[in-house]
Image (tube, rainbow, N blue to C red; front, side, top):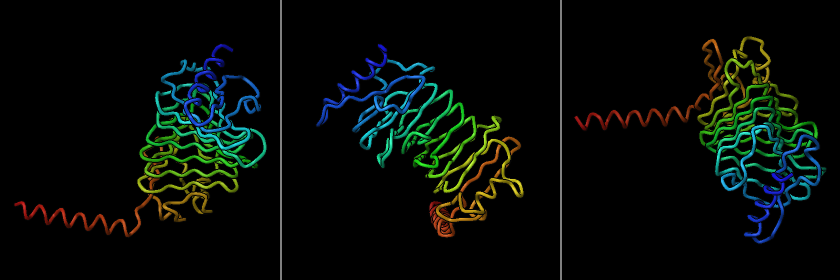
Length: 270
C-alpha cells in the first residue's frame, strides 16, 4: 500500500508540471488488473530513475479508462513479473507504452488481451518476456512496433490473436533459442517485416507444409508489404531459424551503384 502511494504521489507531482494536474497510478496488484481505479486519463512520463524501485515480483498494469493515455519508459531498465497493457472498459481509447529503456518480465506480457486497446512501441531498446506474449484479442486491438534496432524477445509462445498488428522496422522479433517458443497467428493478425528486420524462431518452424509457411502463404506475414515466401530468406543453424526480408530489386540497384562508385574511387586513389 505504501509503494502504491509513493508511485501515485510521484506521478501526480510530475503531472502538476503540465497543463493539468492529474493523478496516475502504476499499481502492483495480484488481481483485478483492469479495475477502473487503476487507470490513466491523460499523458504521463514514467521515469523510473526517480521512483521507488519496482520489485521483480511486481505486476505492472497500465490502462486508461476514459481517454487515450501514453506512458514513456525512458530513464532506467525495469524488471518486473508481468506487464498488462490496454484500455479499461469499453470504447475506442488506447493505452500506449513507449519503451526506450530495457524492460524485462519474468512472466507474461499482454497487449490488449481481454482488457482494452493497447499499443507498445519499442525504439532502440530490448523488451524480454519470460513467459507467453499475447497481442490483441477478439474484441480489442493490440499493436506492437519494433524500430531502430529494437528487440522484442520471448521465452514463451508469441501469440498474435485477432485484431493484432506487429510491425518490425530495422529491428528484431525473437523467439529465444532453445526455449521451444513459437509464433501463433489467428484470424486478422498481421506481421510486417520491413527494411533490415529479422524474425528469429525458436527452432526450425519453416519446414515444408509447416504452419509458419502457411502464415506466409496466406499473407499474414509480409516483407516490406509484399506477400509470398520469395520475399524472405531463411537460415537454419540447428538451433533457430532466422527469417529476413529480401531487398527489393530497386535496393539491389542502389547497392550495385554504390559498389561501382566505390570501385571507381579506389582506382582513382591508386
